[in-house]
Image 1 (cartoon, one colour):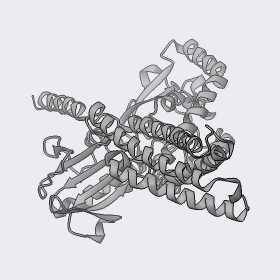
Image 2: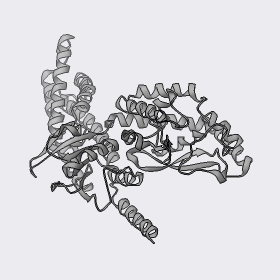
Image 3: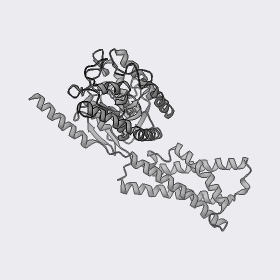
Image 4: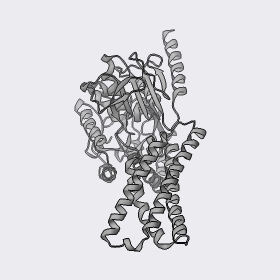
Length: 467
């Protein structure tokens, strides 16, 4: 009876979490940024063409348009770095105006400085350029105001997701934020339960800003979980160095102060680069390797008639569950869904074709589909089975930092793998070596490093520990 009740409560809790998952607003923001950039460029050209018509009497006069084209790339460069195309500028149109005008003024100063030293000032009409700048400024302001009205009407004024988790701390009335109770969803920051972490991961999915209000004794645990989740997180607290705070945020309207304890490992530009790299490489690999994939699938099917793929639940980004694909290498009746037993040499569960594809890492290739679905990356910390152990201990019991490796998407390969840390985890050192490499990769991510790891992976596809 207790077991049935427990399963029923888990099902109800899971359904409640699904209803609370926030919609993703990142694509909406990206479309808004691209639209703003496109219209800004058009308005700058239009302004200078209009200025030339008024002052010179000629529409689209050559020198005026050369000045506009010289300014455009400089303006976009400065605007991208000063946050003209950022969440803050979309949330507050006046802030967006200040940033856009700042970028425009700096652009004019830099282009004028360059023209002075190249002695090309005399080629341009100062009056026409000044008039073009004024027209541009006016139109930039008008565009931001119109964009704010469109956002208010079409999106309900919402361009980012904010979540407050109430875990028994001081009240925190954050306008525009969704508030949930930690008790209602059985969220215990001190727990190592993967199912609890999956619930928390789903609740934090697509959140741009998370604030936790909790008692003082639980602040350290929540700070650690927010770092592991890879989100921008704050804790309502008095200043406390022990939490590893990276900043302080004051909410003067409600009289509260929070500590910023996590910011996520990658900024928007880095996430776009990494996702673009994943899509390009995974798409090319799927096309180039399709003959091999079909041949392996046929051989697996012919050997014993069982399923071609082995689908296993693993922990992904933010410690959320996802279904990972592999070519089946074990006999159908001896499959190990939770990975309770590590694979050993001469393992009696492995089929003949299974031994070959494991030895050559071909069994991992179906994870290209996970990459295309956005659940995995080409490079990242490898996802482990829930039942994985070292020295008869669960991985998270050996080192709690294990959860922190989940602030990025898991990868087909990773820094640990190219360093030779792969295969069975018989000793605790087998896990800590991998963990150290994974955390090093997360703290020092770059696209160049991803490319390097991918190329080095080719050299270690066949490995003495791959069995």
